[in-house]
Image 1 (cartoon, each protein chain N blue to C red):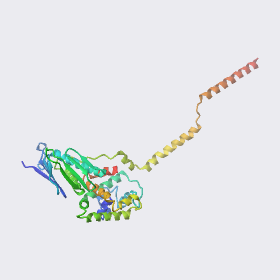
Image 2 (tube, one colour):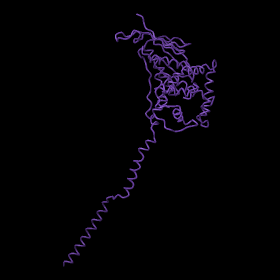
Image 3 (cartoon, chains in turn orange, blue):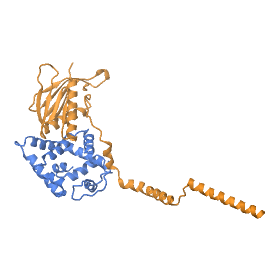
Length: 209
Length: 153
C-alpha cells in the first residue's frame, strides 16, 4: 500500500510526515491519521527521525522552550528524550537522547533564526487539516491580576465614590444627634423621681391632716 | 510595534490596512486612534494616559501578530544576520541603526529606560528578544502566545 507524505518547509527546516489515512473513519485518501514515520531536516545538522512518541515529545519540548523564551530570561527544557538549554542569547543547545541502547546522544547547536523556523514548521503542521494533530501549543494562562490594569478607575470612582461619601456623611451627621440609652443614668433618674414622689405624698398627707 | 515599524518603512499605513482586513474598524478606525493608543507608552515624548481598554489591547495584539506573519522573512533575515554577525552583519546593523533613529525621534531620551534602548553596546539583548518574540508568535496560535506574554510582562 502506498503511504502518503506531507512536507512542511520553512527556510532552513523541513518536516516530513509519512503515514496512512484511517479508512475505518471514512477519511479522505490524502489524509494522514496514522503517522508511521517522520523526518526533521535542519540545514547543517544530521537528520532527526523517530516514531510518533518522539515527534510528540520533540514538539512539546520546542513549544515549551519557546514559551519560556518569550516569557522568561532563563529558558531551559529537560525530558526523557530531549533537553534544550539556552547557551547565550544567540545559541540554543539541543540534546537528543536515543531510546535505543548504546547510542550516544546527539548534540546540536541552533541559532535564533533556526529555532523560529522549527517553531514555524511545527505551527504549519498543527494548522494542517490533512494530518492528525500530535502536540499543540501549551500556553500558560495569564494571571488574573494582569487584567486589573484594564479596569477604568475613573468610571469606578464615579459610580462608587459618590454614594459612599453620602453614606459616610449621613452616618457622621446622624451620629452627632443620636441619644444613647444609659442604664446607670436611668436608675439615678428613677431614684430621684421616687424620692420626689415620697416627698409629695408626705406633703399631701400633711395638707389633708 | 516599533520593532515592526523599524522593518516596514510604511508601518503606520500597514497597521491600518491590517486593521481593516481583520474587521477591527470599530476599535481602530484610523491612524489617529492607533497613534493615541500607542501614546499610552510612558516612554514616549507625547505620552498621554488615556486608559487602554481590553478590546483595544486585543485588537493591537491581533494586528501585531498579523504584521509579524507578513514580515516573517525579514525578521528571520535579521535574526540570521545576528547569528552570523561575522559573515553578514548588514541586515542586523541596518535594523539596529533605524531602531535607534526611531527611538530618538519618538521617545523621551532623558528617561533611563530609553537610554538603555539606544545604548549601542547594550541593547542587543532587548532587540533580539523583541524580534524572537515576534518570530515565534507569527502563526495562527501566535495571538494567544503574544497576549499571554504581554499580560505576564
